[in-house]
Image (cartoon, rainbow, N blue to C red; front, side, top):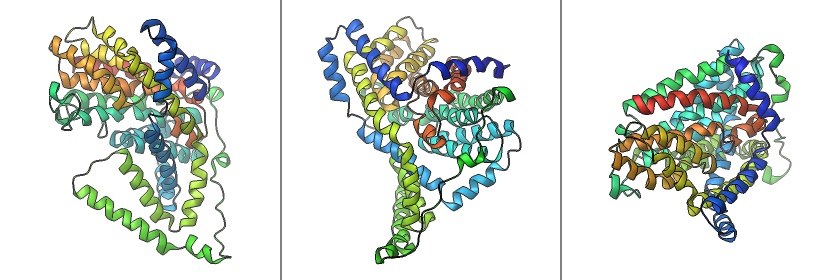
Amino acid sequence: MLNRASQPLVKMVDRYLPDPYIFVLLLTLIVFAAAVLFERQSPLAVVEMWGNGFWGLLTFSMQMLLVLVTGFMLASTPLVKNFLVKLATFAKTPGQAILLVTMVSLVASWINWGFGLVVGALFAKELARLIKVDYRLLIASAYSGFIVWHGGLAGSVPLTIATPGHFAESQIGIISTSETIFAFFNIAIVLMLFIIVPLTNWLMLPKEEDSIYVKPEQLQDAPEASSEITRPADHLENSRVLAWLIGFGGVAFLVNYFMNSGGLNLNIVNFLFLTVAIILHQTPRRLLNALHEAVKGGAGIVIQFPFYAGIMAIMINSGLAQSISAGLASFATATSLPFWTFISAGIVNIFVPSGGGQWAVQAPVMLPAAEALGADVARISMAVAWGDAWTNLLQPFWALPALAIAGLKAKDIMGYCLMMLIVTGVFISIGLTWF
């Protein structure tokens, strides 16, 4: 049934969803107009907000580019390639391929969102080499596992409020992860999604006549550049000793970091990917060959993230984000507040696709509402987190690394993601409200 229901969405999105760059330009104009019309900001003031915030995500943009690049380099090592190929052989049919890639993505994303984005897409490519399955749904399935990230070990909202010194500490204190990530209601939501997301992807498998396949030869890696030594500098470029000295130096840092109770974050994940890639590629030349292939897909990240930083600045500084949150919370009860918080967070996330940034916007609105109504603050915090994760299925911002690896465009997968948005929204709402 879902395969029939999803096809109109797939065709509609394929026809009307523009390139993510056009999408972010349209979002910029919409937010600009809304700030002027609803928040009574002058056009010049909004332009200043936009321009001043335009470069606010430079660090994060580089981190995201490195997620793509280091993950690609790691996955292109012989050891990891062989592991992915072996794991892919467990799937014998298109349905099994969809289920397997979704589960791998869910597990990886629950551990760390950057890890999940890269591993899911790379594993999907390996499956596509072995099994004739709709490539769009395969990549959409790999991306769909990303929905659990904010309820997992690297969720920025629960980790922020569990850290001493966070900006709302004077209001809510320190909230342990036992009340958020490891609370019954959150674990129940995660477990539900581990069942619902693979099943939904499997049920969306299109018929043969509606499927789009990719030929295995289209997914072949670029031929490795020659490592022939013709000049003295070539000895350094092909030196295993040089690569291993640097690589094992990185290992020493990581061991010391984790022994001193360091936690996973984006910088550590990138450092880990790069360190292991340096060691497994064995020579600097092989690593550089992989780097050359990896950077080809990073153009979308480089050009689009500054525009999202500008949008975030308008949303926050004009008061738009706060107005959306306050408007939805204004008619909530203690029981329904988690649901309306979830919905408002989902809406805000379309314009402010950053978990930490979104918490900074919504916490000043939602926390007083929770206290006034006597609602559970930990649950309200996780409602913001889940709303942020939920509409990532609609927002192509986070799909850019996966799309770059897969060689697809947003319109190719977002029809399936839209159906997943509808299905998962129901179950997350139930979990936040009734569990």
